[in-house]
Length: 294
Ligand code: MN
Ligand code: MN
Image 1 (tube, rainbow, N blue to C red):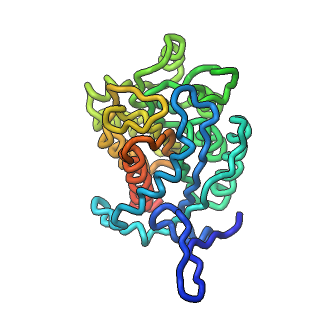
Image 2: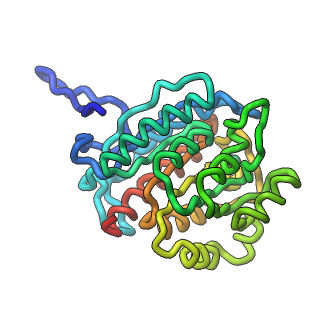
Image 3: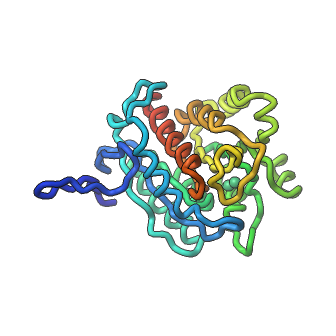
């Protein structure tokens, strides 16, 4: 993979490409490699997640580089932004592209961080990272065998992951047909949105942490895990969900265990709330992972 320089010095001016704030390291020196997948080809309700990566990068520039809870300045963490994949129209091909890029990043001993785009791309990330445990926050079970004629629909992501990873934990779900809930009961550890509310996210995460021990984790955040009344920039909005603080707690707790991360399904036709949460959570992931010395 080629090195990318984001600031080009001309005679008098610096030209900046739009990239995630503080992602200024060269590829060679980076510990984390961010990339976007502007794809929403299997979207079933409201399209727009193809604009997610750009919106997340734009709003990331709004935040201070200093992250007070870890005491870390993100500008001192070596991470880079590779830009967006030029995506195919076919979902199975997009999964292939993501697996290729993420595979390069993993082989170069870096942590891939993907900005969605629809959830489908996560299948390629999991293929590349090969985790022992897959943990996803999502309003939807995503456990359909196929949807709209393709097994690579955004509604089939967790089902495809189950073909690669035995240990799957779903947090925040509140939507799926009865068959999917049966699959979830048999083959996953499901903490529904109601369960999160009843137990509190801290208690849920204590259980999850015990479960994962020292195993290699992949962490995926579908933006619609959060209640659509709080972050309405969603292609498939669901109320009665988790809060942004719940998601932050998930990432703070699990980032040190994760070998790969994504934040997907941001459809930025709101006032920027959904992308703002996404950008802060991506920063949180990088800061927490780095602080843990992984
Ligand atoms: Mn999903
Ligand atoms: Mn979802």
